[in-house]
Length: 133
Image (cartoon, rainbow, N blue to C red):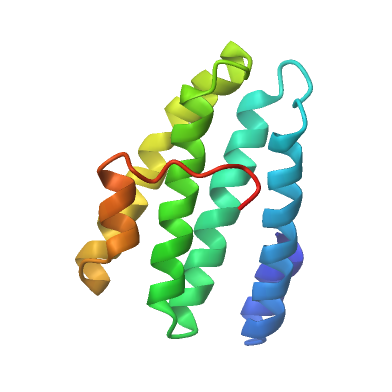
């Protein structure tokens, strides 16, 4: 994420996006595997921040549609984790806590860019997505 920030500050948005997408892929892997005990919240936080950062860069690149889909997918991932009884309680609780951040991001995106089907679906609770997305 630091490399992405540095690239963004230098105006190299494509490079910043590539670095953020790498961070997102790593965060997804951390959550797909069983996070180390006591680090569940950190892993979910990384997942959320990575999604939000990529979505912000997509908006800056004039791709609000892609950002809307990504935000909906992020919220759906958290909903899926909360509902998945196979996940440990700490991971499910972390997903529930961080869900307010993705919820707020969905609402902010609608305020800035108008309604989007992926956001409507995620807000309706129909955005349950698997971790393989």
